[in-house]
Length: 415
Image 1 (cartoon, rainbow, N blue to C red):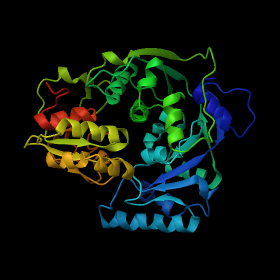
Image 2: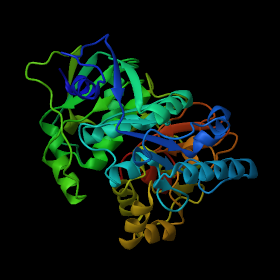
Image 3: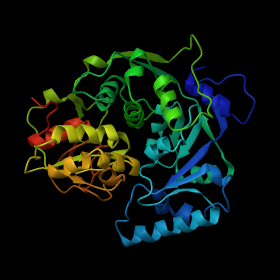
Image 4: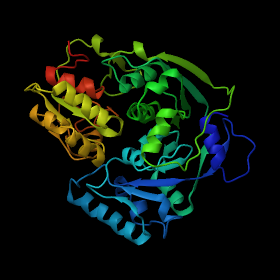
């Protein structure tokens, strides 16, 4: 069995001898996470479970609308606050206390190697960086999980992606994902398992960026193996009560691709989609921009903020560009402040917001207008994603966004 099949096997509520593609496996969930978007679903806030299966295994994170952008949402999330009190949930991260669920879950040790996570957000596949299975599920299914602690999955086929060498200078993990997407296309119902000697050169931020973005391939799960980088991260967080999972020897995969990370240059996703829409930045020509955005669960991490600050140090962004930078968690915000990154960005005339999903979902903190051309390090770029349906959204790495904000047009290197 591969990593994904093994974790499902280990969590099965029924005795099994093996797990393979096509099987339906009913599993116990290690943790269920809700985000503030749950307040927008009447089937949840109007008729929640009387009590959770285990308050210690339920988390609620306010991340999409922080702070509340209007009266309706303010009233709705107030109902969630009352529910937290009634259920006795301790892992509640209100506005100003946490950040994006996929990021603080890693910071707080919710994503233990070998574990299984359910969340209401579609980018829950982000947990794969931690050798953890995570899946975004609909609100009705989360209601069932909160009540019972159980759910089920259809086991999909798994694609093995071998990452070799190291990322070249000037490129990033986001560029590696774009290159992967250009090869795989859309793979609904399938899984991705990463391997290869190059993995040891990838930081946890790098892995998190890649696994998070695999949601855009329509994957069920995307998971990294356990190695010294992950073990050292868990040790530094004081977490050692986990059971990491490795694939069996001679495991067969539906397909296998090899990627030389050192050959991948800065890339972008063209407006309106990612699949079948990837180009090297060097092939774009001159694309003038109005808005530059750095943030999201994929690329609002400390290394992304660092890249922006390094690019902008001692400079000013183009006078025709509006740059918004949104750290993905309170911890990242505070560390970026301590290291001087926020000051550097602000001095360059960039705007740094509080931790939130923010502009990524077009909820607030940088909604774009009619005709705006945007370069963003966020997760999605379909029409209307960040505001106006007539805006044109290009996706790139945080570094590409920062360089483009300086130049006034999309640029992938400083030359």
